[in-house]
Image (cartoon, rainbow over all chains, first blue to last red; front, side, top):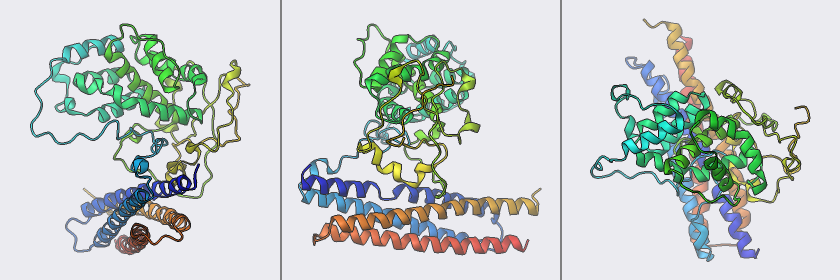
Length: 374
Length: 86
């Protein structure tokens, strides 16, 4: 690495570590508090601190804007250094910890001047969802108005929430309710999310040899929710996550990969003890009070996971567990390389990284614990 | 029908949100201080306008966060005084 590259890396790291997340989180909290106090004091002449909270929100907004200006200035200076080509590119694992979809992959939809004509793929999509989930499409009167208007990000969150609750009927309803284009777009949105979540679960970048471990951690749950999905679909997804060569797909229905990937996302989220809302790109990063030590890394529960064994919301505060398969020597991983970008990624250094539901990055010298007791 | 206890509980819930916001602001200020130090070390010797702009923006962000924190403290005090007199 040249001196210039080193300087550029430092500047980018500094820019990425600017506390935009905590400021956004603070803004959300202050707005919530203001709304609540406004509701309480609606007819009272006592201000109850609301004007001061308004001032606080304004200051926080200015702070957030100043942070963005600073980031722009740093990016401009990187351009001066001749590093502009990659100066604007977000770091690949910036949102790794939160598991949020990469916005480059799924940019927020821009307001369309006119609604597109209704698609004609509805029956085709619903038939396949029925086949995959075993759940028949709901009758039209059972579908709440506006359900088909959800975007793919919202669909992914709903699927993840359904997976977490172990409710296959709900999963089926959510998938049936959307248009085919929305559902199929899951295929484009999920790969980076899956890669990040798998990395968080494993404690390192997914590698080809991790495929069996991920399969043992997720296959049972995926099969229980999607009894109709071909095993090859899950295998292909896991191989892609781990950057392993995948078997060539033969005759796979396009919906299979999209639906299975979304359910797999939900399973990995549940494994990590994270909430489906953590997939919300605009959501503020939750902030935990600084001070308490990071939770201990835990153990990956053994393979065949029944729905009841998946961490439920009540268990979300427990550290997720990553425990290797005892019978597989390869399951005891090598220490995570501390020098990798993931080990020093900005997001992991933010206060939000100590949120109870989050799994801290595994220490470099800390191997996964073999499940000797199992 | 609402009771005093309910009003107090609602205000307490709002204050809890404010407290969490304050924690986030404090965390942000700590991170910001680290970023300022890191930037100063990396850009020592540069007189480029963009560098000056970055430094100035970070200082402004820190000042805004400080004022934000101060405003929340006053708001909390007012709300607590209100509930104490209910």
